Image (cartoon, rainbow, N blue to C red; front, side, top):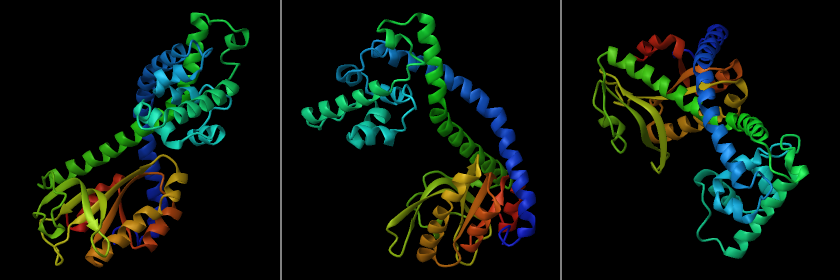
Length: 316
């Protein structure tokens, strides 16, 4: 074992991991947030104008600009989560998701049903508009440029968290993969692309690949996405490579909600390849003793990003 059997080191490692994530976040997140906020203010202003400054939230206005729905949810008091809007309006869930993710209306929905759904959405948003942010609505008149700019900035701030978080997660994951690549290349490993579909035991010695789908389960019918697959220079008896899952977290809550995912993966992998298959977690951020203890009980091990040299303990 690398770290799973050393609970006396966990506390120190948790602190170091949190510090590492926070240092990166403080450098990266403000720049990302400012850039996203600038872009988002413009999007919000356009969405507000498309509804005649929120004076005409109608089937025609949101039908002409379906992607504005995500922004319109942020104009209410309180701001509406997507599922809350769906529940209050009793509208079609797939319709709302398509409008927000693809910025378009479904082409196969019955026109009468579509109109009814959009009308219900408009009714809920109009009833819940945050009048404190849009004072011109109660007066029934157009806003000044300053009022529109101020309101757009407030709504952009509400929206930015939802937009920025995935950007930060993706950037952190890519940073972790880059670190692993740099480490392996200093050990003279070779990166190979497009290995999905290749039997694990056929992966060449001294190579690694990213984002490989690994067949698993009793009948190999389950495809498990694996972040990094490393075939060491000295083959193991089983000829199986090491599978690496890059994980980062900015708080303790989410990791403990999702800790069963890796346990499920390793069970499915072992049912296909036996007990010698290893799924190693590459951790950076907020992973507490509760999370670590759970993963250790599921026979999962991990390498901390702040101690990347622990890869040597795998024989890499």
